[in-house]
Image 1 (cartoon, one colour):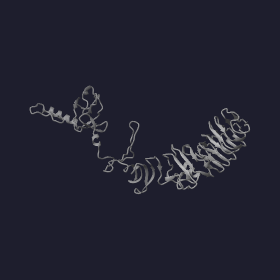
Image 2 (image 1 turned 90 degrees about the vertical axis):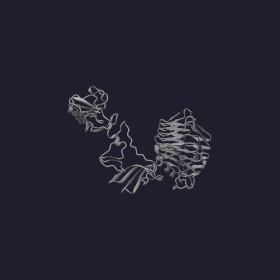
Image 3 (image 1 turned 30 degrees about the horizontal axis):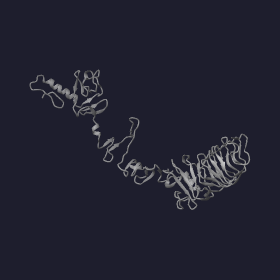
Image 4 (image 1 turned 180 degrees about the horizontal axis):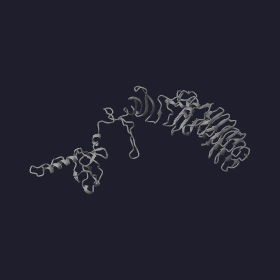
Length: 484
């Protein structure tokens, strides 16, 4: 054996002449390898003007004097390149990167790779411990994206465990958010680090947001059950109203102990919730209700609210009073079904941009002193979505003004008894529109003017002719009113 096993240092042989040559060669090799520090590890060809003692790790695709020396240590000694083949475990400091690298038998890699992955503890500018196995002491920490996105994950083993972010003052907890003891996301606060108050919770199953400590509310309609800001429906909702109910109930059961007493309470409950994609209905018990709905607040997202009585026998569910139904305001939307509207002034008053839908089994059952139905104000709209009946007279049946709309397309309106419409059956003024094309009006003995359109209003029948509406007196137009 004429050289050492690990560094391949030449031995001085017993009979060797010029022993100093072999000795100096070994010294040069030691000089190149001991405290190995290379200038660069990314050069594939030799630098133009190396200095004595310069060392490099030869990069891939080597060329020139370094051809086929990839991965080896190239040392410039006595005006020539000397190459040293690394062995597993060699360490080198790369000066231009200020980084330690190690040779793993195939390539030079970060020396820290195997020491940090995995590592029992890592402390950056501080000391990690058994609980805080990763500890960082710095003014800020940055987690940056690599390909556009970046997500910080905090995982727990089971729902009863905790995965959260804790904020401290002097290492004493003051606020915490995350999944603490369950799968609901919550925010908790503490004044002393020991007594904690849950300030907010979002239910994992429903997405509802709860405020366990409540809010300083300024309006009664902000208060809903279980102290939610708004209850978000997960199914259709029906509120029941009965003569033996109570407005201290929740309205959710058709019983004396569950139903509301008044329609107004049911309306207030309905507009206070978030219906999401579901329907909200107020179900009235049979009887005569002297105070009907007066709605001026829209449902969230302008969802329609349905007021329903008796679909089989609407005469059994009567709304009396001065005005049976009042809807006012942009976004307010109310659908009616199964009701006898017996208002002494108006059956339906739709104003200020509201919308009312006439659904199945509606009867106008009493003599209203103004009209059975009226729209009043720009955008106010009554849509007739089903056939209905008229059992009592009024000065006007349809009354649209100003810039309001009444739409009754392809419906059958059944009249009963002897009925007089002293103003006009269909009356429109000030830019309003009544549209009843393809509809028919049948039954009863009807007297009075058929229609009146004035002040640029339009009554549209789809060309049904002058006798389209019931009555005994021909209709008229004036001051820009149109009929046809």
